Image (tube, rainbow, N blue to C red; front, side, top):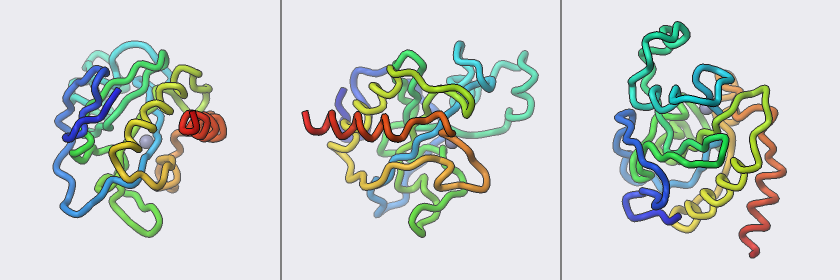
Length: 182
Ligand SMILES: [Zn+2]
């Protein structure tokens, strides 16, 4: 894996999402935001998330009626088996955080990269996902001056709960530290 100048990660699947735009000038990418998502909720198979991020939700699923008009994306999606799909090049602004604030700065999409872990607030993530997330974090940190890694719930606490209580920050940070030292 390697990130090129436009922010495409080599060696992973890329599926283009229209739900992005240019980052406002002068915004260095300094924040990594971890999310969880499953589509429909708690279902980890199928293409619901891909359909959501590409505005092609299957109209046969009734739950999707409630979210049909959402226009959202993330730069990366980490599946349960550790496979990574990129939807937006890091140079562009993905629409993952919504109304948000980190260290007094609002509009976190301007200066962050969004990573969606396939999962929910009620089920642990897989080891393969942590391995993939650590590798991804390290590659991104080589290219961007990332100073903070946080959860969606930390930048939008009144609206969001993800990545949720089952996201093991200790496991992630420990693995990150070990990987950086090796
Ligand atoms: Zn989120």
